[in-house]
Image (cartoon, rainbow, N blue to C red; front, top):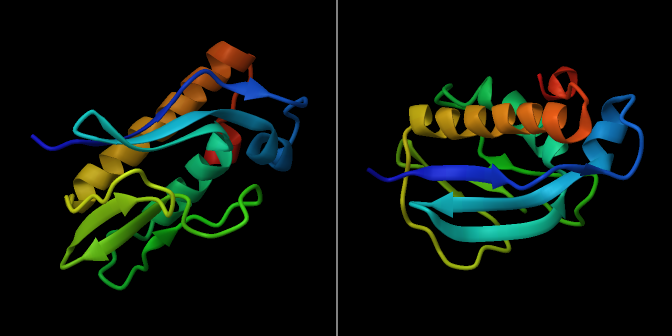
Length: 140
């Protein structure tokens, strides 16, 4: 079975995490987008809390047939699309403007939601274990 995943390494923070902006900009981890266990895109010191919050917000409307694509626009990156999820004939493709190789695989809304939920859960769990901080209020 085909599988897409957003994965993170250990979290690190360059400042106390006392509000949303500090969490979005100050909490980073190594980040990868994987398709069937193969890395398609990776980045070090990636703002994973901000991405998780953006993905969670987008996911609320993603099942709507009129919902738009996800083109991540971060406070920490100079251009849109470091992570994207785009609709193709009723299915979803995943990638990045900086991906290592083209991905033509598509996933259902359920598969995308599962990958996002797993990623958000991992960020919250690692926030607790790595930083002793509850990041859930800023992820949603």
